[in-house]
Length: 253
Image 1 (cartoon, rainbow, N blue to C red):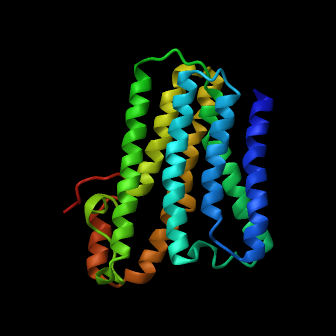
Image 2: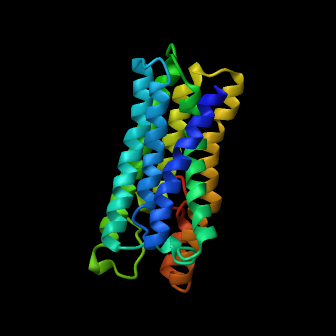
């Protein structure tokens, strides 16, 4: 199992290193999200072919690939249309800082995929259905939220406005909530096939992605940018005060 984990880590490291060199030399933001998506897909495919290749393993691999293809294609399309990614404005020209980001996303993909790497030959139980349901709910939530925000931002009438309809009426970051559910669902899906140590280590996956989105690279950055743009707008302040930050809930009065 240790050799399997090491190989699974080397795969995204090699992919991200190769594409980082190209991205840094060309000062391009167009490869970053593609590399992130490819990292997940590559680990999932490796996990499948290094297992018994059962229908269970195929389904588990498919869950990760579907998510990666969905979010990867969306993010790549968005950056191709815009031409740049504001996240890298301060680090794009720094070899060390830019490399740290690429290294971080390679390691992130490996950590998040731990439950899939641990799982093999599950005999199945009711919790598998629960895991699939949570995964599907998360996938749909994230996809719908992304589409709603993309359409909103590309409507000239909404220039300098914030989105507050659809899922965004109930949460300020429903897309992140959906992504957390995706990996929680996959973790639940794998539980029947994990031993005690693997259950503990596998739980790092949904906890880690939730921590990143809630406290590091997701919510804090967007909330900070939103406060800079609309912090003096009373309507925005009312929206912020009444709307759940992550879990979709009815707005507070």
